[in-house]
Amino acid sequence: MPDPEHEVVQQLKAHKQELAELVTTIHFERHPELDERYGEEGRKKCHEDTMYHLDYLDQAVRVDSKKLFSNYLEWARTMLRERGIPKNDLVDNIVVLREAIKKILPDSEASLLAGYINEGLSSLQGTDGKEITFLNADEPLFDEARKYLDLLLSGDRKKAAQLIRKLVDDGTSIKDIYEHIFQKTQYEVGALWQTNQITVAHEHFCTAATQLIMSQLYPEIFATKKTGKRLVSCSVGSELHEIGIRMVTDYFEMEGWDTYYLGANMPDNHLIASIKETKADLLAISITIPLHISKAKNLIEKIRLESEFEQMKIIVGGYPFKIVPNLWKKVGADASALSANEAIEIANKLILN
Image (cartoon, rainbow, N blue to C red):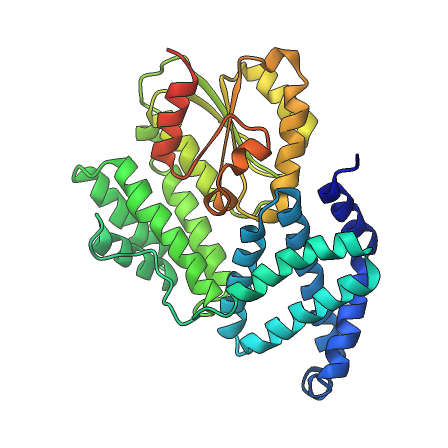
């Protein structure tokens, strides 16, 4: 008997462009003022946004998680609101998407997708004025994290590096700096972009500066006595947010593991060859964008076909795994971790001494 979720995914893939074109046409017919306000560029943006909606809807169906789609819409609501686009514009667009799906897709597939869309629309009715921040005054190194972020946002990478160097010299552990300064400020930078308080250029500068400052700590990090355990780590697809998996990798290095960080955009066959070459005990895969869930699943399926990797464990982490409980099982991993510390704890349980 055909898998209904598989059928829905196939239908979405086959009709994606057609759906986006129909949504754009209907949306602008119902809101003629949009043509006056935005013109042809507005239609192109509506088409582009609808393609994103469909991509996220596709991934939500693949992992059977309505929450994944709802969370995406809540993120989009905040991002658009801070750029002067009313919530109702997004709501109207999603309503039209539901109608277009009903017009184009078979009844059974349209009905299944309506369940995801309806739950997403319900999530948009909640309050949307809550401040987003990851820097809390009651957490360790709050003042230092705030100062570090302010220095980066002002473009003063040199003083930011000096701040971190002084903390290390004064006895602050590198792990604490990673957890309470680097990690928290990266989350905060993302929130500041989402709420339109900084530009993409600011975000990229802060990330690049933090990566450089992290590398300046490597003499201490790589001086740790080794245990003989080996980790290969990577991000899947064209992930731009690699810094999280770099932090996790450095944590393993500080725990005495030999680590091999491969970054993003590594072709599957080359990654598999690297795992064989290094004789890795553990593979850590990061996903920050939900659209890459299926890529991670496909990669893990390929790895599981290799008899050489029967003893190797796979751990996954990143934003989608915070949203969807047990998503790690659906992609075929052995476990997931929500922090570097948790990744170490889980790895030590998975890999017998």
